[in-house]
Length: 70
Image (cartoon, rainbow, N blue to C red):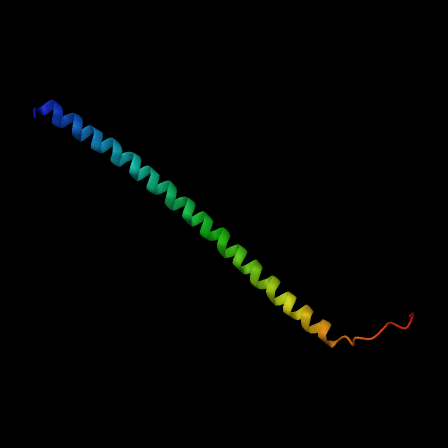
């Protein structure tokens, strides 16, 4: 192998490394963004669950009888 072949191989490897580093950075940014969305949705889900439990508890306190207009 001569010096030109080695230079070409090294350039190919450096190019691939640059693309991989860029891909990894974009993947990390996307992962961080999705985690933020997931945390927000999880908090909203917990709030909705708590509210539903509160409402179902209040409904359990309402007597099951016909309203007076029947």
